Length: 352
Ligand code: 8ID
Ligand code: ZN
Ligand code: ZN
Image (cartoon, rainbow, N blue to C red; front, side):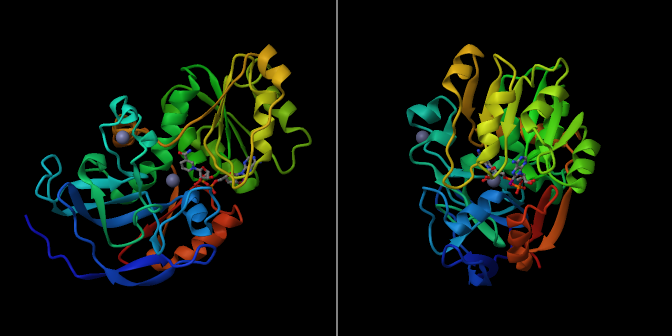
């Protein structure tokens, strides 16, 4: 099978951080010896893409930058050393675009910690373009009968929350509070938790997010914008009033990161996943010790987490809502995201 590959394509390009991307034509990249060229059909829009555009994290972005790291598409070309990815195969580009697979982190399946990792839509160009290059050993393999549109948000949001739930140690029958449950990661977290037999206390704001999270299977919803005491409300929502067994922090605000250790159950685990800019963690040492609380970070997932997260999806266990927009509309999506007005995820269609 061979594909006609154009020399030029449409892309959204961040030229200056802090300014919206520019929709324009750029050259199509060429895959290196161990890389594949993917015709991206759809890409999810993650809040991380907005952080990259703003340049608000202490990690430098490539400029000019094509953002995006939830891209699903078809392999149209491959380098001579690529053996395990076929032309015509459906694959996904995720946050970890390339890892060395030889360092002590990669050897232990911690590719996200690889000091030589390349990051899609951050240190290398990502998926807000029609053709993107990725390292063949790091692409996600997508079964042919899975919708590329619907699976796109799994490639970051799905993998990340699935990994976060595993890192939380929560088991079937236990309860997890999901903070930011109405957003892209949050909606996925409810569905993965449900599939894993874990109950969810959803925390976010507004009627749309309340309805949406309950429809996805959350057992209760707490509106942080109207609650008089979030800590007391979360505890009260847990089955025995002692607090949830774990907390997944997906919000883009510092305050909930300070609150979580107050309501997590003694012996419980607080998992930090959201990354508000310039924010710090603060917890009472006395209560962390005497309640035996674990506070940890969780960063995307490795290739095994990726395969598992996609497998959950392919088995029909994960149904998170998404809206489709044209690639040309990306700046509008960033505005809605900045205002926290998106319920679930936006997916952009690169053909428009
Ligand atoms: O590997 C990682 N750790 C990883 C992977 C992917 C994304 C981390 N992230 C980070 C993103 O960079 C971002 O900082 O996770 C965060 C959430 O990403 P997202 O789900 O893509 O963002 P969103 O769709 O905008 O959802 C955020 C939700 O948080 C709510 C908002 O209302 C929104 O629904 N929220 C906020 I802001 N403050 C809240 C609060 N105090 C809150 N919900 C509850 N309590
Ligand atoms: Zn992401
Ligand atoms: Zn490595």
